[in-house]
Image (cartoon, rainbow, N blue to C red; front, side, top):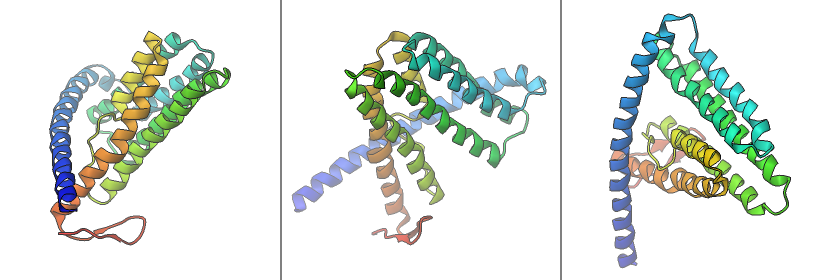
Length: 235
């Protein structure tokens, strides 16, 4: 048992180091993207009367329009629409910062509508593959990808509600959207679904849970659980 414990501890330490490196890389990447989009939006949309929430709604409406194309198997056109819609998802936050419209409600609205947009994309693909009885594997992959996507957001929100930093993972929403768009434009939809099903769940469960456990051990105290009770944290 001691050998098993040592092996488990070594694996956990290695995973923690990997996640820490990835977190540093993603923070630098996100900072550069924010600076670039912020400067661009400040010089263009920042001078208009457009509200950030309008861009958030446009993202959802365009994604809704893509459902028909995806459900009919016209993946290339659907991919173009999803790619165009995702631009508004990038610009809404930059516009809010440029016009000092940042608010908790805006952040909540953006996060909520993003979840709906994700589900709409999977809905379009599900309708298409359900029409063909030979694509049962794709149906299961869509379910797994949907579960992984939702769990990633849920675990992150749950952990941050307890005071932990969980902005890590292999496949968060920006990476998922890029992967979806590439899969739709190239026609490699099944491969894209495999990647989403596997990587999104890897992001949702082991990586984020490991980060929460690591920060819990560092805190060395009981952490309140928003769902009731406490988390027992061993020293």
